[in-house]
Length: 433
Ligand code: AMP
Ligand code: GLY
Image 1 (spheres, helix red, strand yellow):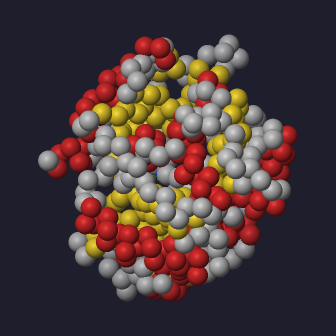
Image 2 (image 1 turned 180 degrees about the vertical axis):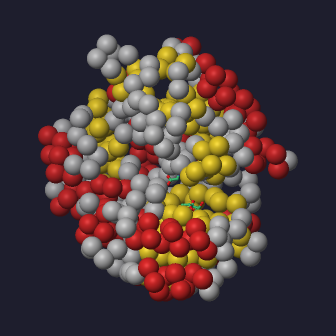
């Protein structure tokens, strides 16, 4: 039995995984960390192996070949494909839920049924397989109304429709969307949900059965444009802590949402060991669950991990081993921010291959870092853009203002013909004061 893992595989290729690698490396056990498939920046820190994040058999084989003692899974797709189940069957401990737990993210209907069954605050909703009854239902509800596809849809499965006409067209589009659950079950479903109003906050919870540790609060910026305008993205930046979540509000969120959610999942017979990411709307009448994700948030993780004083490896390992009881979060008294640099055009079509010039790592002060997401090397060995979200520029400082100023100074030094980033990450909190 491994008392403490010394060889770790991180699965994924985004900024979240780069942040996880950077958080695991300083563990006192001085682990060997590898990543699959990783990206050009992660490859600067640890060895990367070209096994895709959705190649479950390939990842298990890699873990066995590299004598991996602990796997930390970043994205949801391998979890929903049963990567954790397969690793556990092979005797390799894993941080990240098995397929039954990953359904909390891959099926919005499964999640809604749990939320309603256990009376956890969430928007009223109804489920449909056919357009006609869905449209009849929505016409009787006030607009705006939210239309959601059931399965994983890479961020394209949710439409917050401002009018009934928009909602009706979303019903037709989403019923036809080729989501993963539709491949499993050709009769695709949609969910119609009342619109919640308020500020969103992300609560990341390290869960192990009925035990849990709530990580520092954070807030993502989902829209592409400054002032929260334009289409939704995977997330354009985040900061932590999110002070709109006061200690009293966090206690309410724990009592009304986190503890009931963790217990509900256990009561459903799911032995959940991994991150439960709860997307919460802070409505005028109280916090309400928008969604669960079965993984760390991206870019929330890039802002949350730098504020954790615990040995992150020990924390995730305790959760995977069922030994989380009594573990307390150690929170650093600093602010952290992550500004995402994306390719111009994202979240729609964008160019790949633009060369990126970064300031030399040795020139970076210790309170800033550049995490890589969609980066690769071209045949000449140059760093190039290879994805929509390209880099995450992170900074820590005694104030959010200072953290933002440091991150933005670094963003301006990064050269890349088609870089795009929001100028107002953190502004909501900065302007509140
Ligand atoms: P989801 O994939 O469920 O997180 O939805 C994506 C985004 O759509 C969320 O982050 C919210 O901004 C928005 N959204 C989802 N459900 C609702 C709702 N019931 N009311 C208002 N906005 C929502
Ligand atoms: N930042 C939102 C997410 O990771 O889903």
